[in-house]
Image 1 (spheres, rainbow, N blue to C red):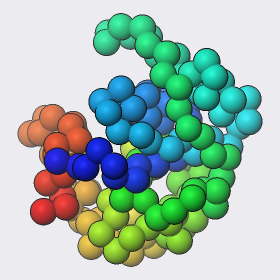
Image 2 (image 1 turned 45 degrees about the vertical axis):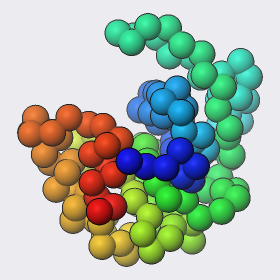
Image 3 (image 1 turned 90 degrees about the vertical axis):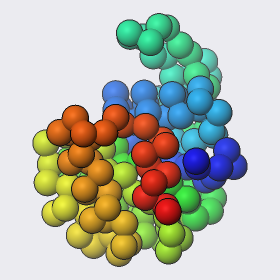
Image 4 (image 1 turned 180 degrees about the vertical axis):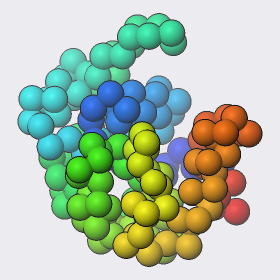
Length: 152
């Protein structure tokens, strides 16, 4: 299990990143949302990210920073949920905020994960790519517990 005091960042505050950050927060962690759009960042803090769907209606207040370079410390787990055209630059910017044991999960839709992972020097790239493929193929559900397997 990932410790509740783990440093978690979600980079990108669109539909994927916003929902991910909100539900991570609702599950008891305290993610930091990286959002380059000031208006979205302000709304994510107060009144909070508004989520509506099959899991109900939720408003979740999140801590935000504008740039990856504004992260206050190295992160244990990063969900990379940028638009495809920002992904590689964001991954490069994240390098200074990763620990050797950090996990980076790219949440790109329809992008070759292995190709995007190049340039992010972590031994977990192949494991993350394999797990993403297992999740996409229905062999595993997408859970934080599955992510914890990567740390073992």
